[in-house]
Image (cartoon, rainbow, N blue to C red; front, top):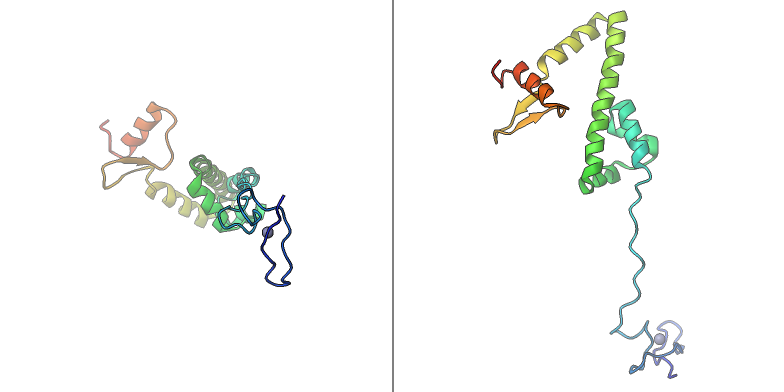
Length: 161
Ligand SMILES: [Zn+2]
C-alpha cells in the first residue's frame, strides 16, 4: 500500500501513514476527507430531579441551582430547550410557594402581625386569573377541574354567577 506523501510541518518528517485509495495522502492529510467526528454529546439531565426538589423546597432558582452545583445559564438553557422540564419547573415553583405560604401562615398566626397583614394583602390583591391583551384567559395555576376553573372565573367576575 502506498504511503502518505505529506510531511509534518514542524519536523519535516514524512507522514508514512497508509495513503487513501486513489490519493497520495492519508485520511488526515487529504483535504477531500472529513476527519471522523466525535459522537454527539448527550445532554446531562441528571441534575434535573435535584434541581426540581430544590425549587419545591426554596421556590428560588438561584438556591435550587446552587443545591445541585449547576450554573444559571445551563438551567435556563434547559428550560428553553425542554418544554417538559419548563412545565415541571413551574409546578415545582408553585409547590414551593405553597409550602412557604403554609410556613408563613403558621408563623403569622403564632407571632407576627406584620407578616399576617402582608399575607392577607398578598392574597387579596393577587389575582388567580388574568385576561391578556389577546383576550386569552391565563390562570396563575392551571385549575385541575372544570368546576375549579369556573370557581376561579366567578371569583374574579369573569364568569357570571
Ligand atoms: Zn498523512
